[in-house]
Image 1: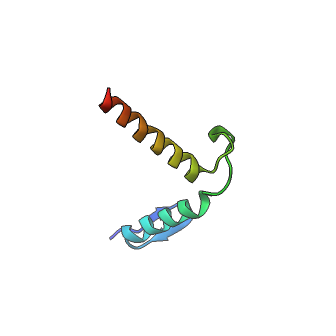
Image 2: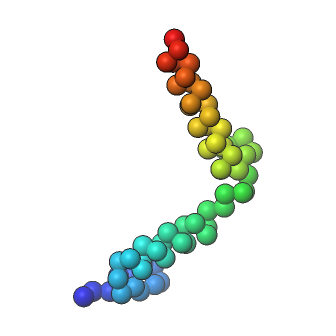
Length: 64
């Protein structure tokens, strides 16, 4: 069996590599930091606004 290398880490099994990668991404991605590209809103709030807008647009399209 071959070891899996991801950056500076070596893993014995693929599941370990996947878990470490997912954890690193989750730790790095800051859901509370405000982003200028999102109008100064945190990512979670911006996503919620987009979903609400899409749902409202879909309802309007079905009503028309």
